[in-house]
Image (cartoon, rainbow, N blue to C red; front, side):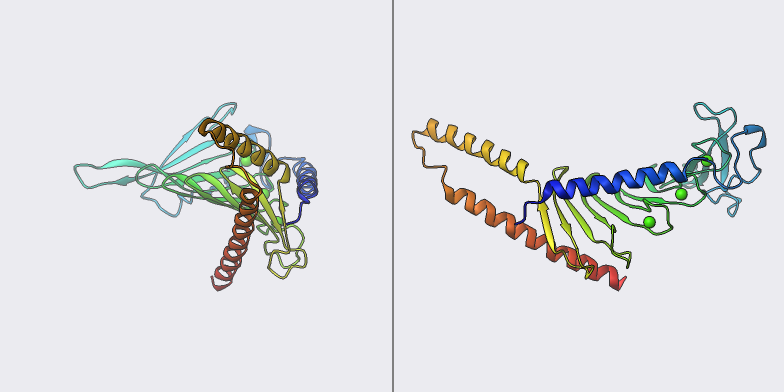
Amino acid sequence: MNARWPIALVWIGTVAVVASCGDAGIGKALIAPGGTVDPEKWPMDDKSLCKYKENPELEVSESVGPGSPKPNVRRVYKLAGDRESRRKVLVCREIDTNLDGIKDVARTFNDRGEAIHEEADTNYDGRLDSWADFEGGRLAKSEIDSNYDGKIDVWKFYVEGDLLRVRRNTHCPNGKEDVWEIYVRGRLDRIGSDLDCDGHVDRWDRDTERLRKDEQQRRAQAEAAAADGGTRTAVSSDAGASDAHATATDAKADAKTIKRDAAEEVVQ
Ligand SMILES: [Ca+2]
Ligand SMILES: [Ca+2]
Ligand SMILES: [Ca+2]
């Protein structure tokens, strides 16, 4: 197991800084094409993401959000239920968050009021760059075009709202994932890197410092338990060895899962 975690973190940090510099450059105007910072001149067509115009049976309500001089929030409703239980249900809500007269984030909802999908133009260049899917109202998957080039390069997967895996395209020209981040109990546990762009992980980097601290804590607890029980044989080098084995097996299992996921994506 390679222990180059700090390098990996610095590298990802660098990517993030470059991305944010790029963001600042691209987003200087912070106005989508056709938009303007002058609310008096907001365009008639606010580039609705809720697509209510194609569905005349839907009801629309416009409201003023915090800090906005004019309505910048649109809610779209449908009528649901039979005659006795007829009610208005929110199906889509969209907002012009940077107040340029162009809608830039929209979320859809099911009949139970749970979020289904969200899409957003986060740098206000007039093109969507962030998509999220929800299951049972909780975030399940998000896809992000982090460098705003029109291609998704970050995929995040959640289980019951907790981040589990992140895949990134950082350097491979085929646009496919080349970095895999595995999270355990919400914490980044390891990073797999595909160095030669063949779709397989070549190197796993781990947070060795955290593993060392966890091991220290485990030993301290085991020693305390052994002292209580009158024996001090609980801690042995075998325990560390079996942990290391479990970790290696774990990483292999992940590599297999990732290969399988990649294969499934090819099929799709
Ligand atoms: Ca806007
Ligand atoms: Ca955008
Ligand atoms: Ca991209």
